[in-house]
View 1: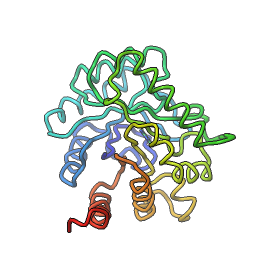
View 2 (view 1 turned 30 degrees about the horizontal axis):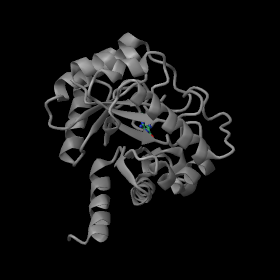
View 3 (view 1 turned 180 degrees about the vertical axis):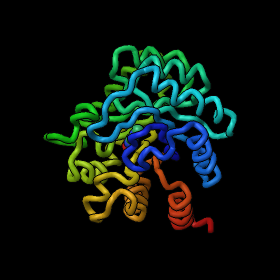
Length: 259
Ligand code: 9MG
């Protein structure tokens, strides 16, 4: 899953892909590099990020959906606003990626009647404050319980379980220790029976271990992505598609022996 941010304050690309044309060109480049899914976001989710009004988010997202919906690659829309979910699905989105895990009032109803894929992500708190004091007694147990409960809510609303994937939400209300604990515990979340989506690309948890700034976290991000795939992740959400695809191909050749 290649990341396409259409935000002026995106934490890792400084908003370089804000203008629709530049974002569309970036998206096409990610497809050429081997992305199987594009995740398009119009509101930054970095720690401390301020909310974006509904109209502004739609103005950022809809031109990309229109331009890319026939690109041959499924489009995931990163949003937690039910009205944006509805508009994105109407415009041709294939998947909704919700960092609030469909907790906002009306979110489940907005997606239940469609057939798009759904990513249920865990977050403790909200982006503006989530890194101030994350606390858990048992991080993997609590994250797993939340994800199971939200998946059950979606299914109770008529969503086919095959549409759902789960994401522990690395960096969303978690310390570095929580993040690595969760990464080690991915198989217990995978045991819930849904595909796992993970996003570790360029995140603080990579910088905390390598001591590197955001622009120099490629090797660390790939190591974490491979560790996640080795523990059952089905989808990895990344900025650096070409390098990650190469790493996954080599990892797969080792695992499957098809080289
Ligand atoms: C939007 N976004 C930023 N980080 C993310 C992550 O780790 N997972 C998902 N599903 N979305 C994310």
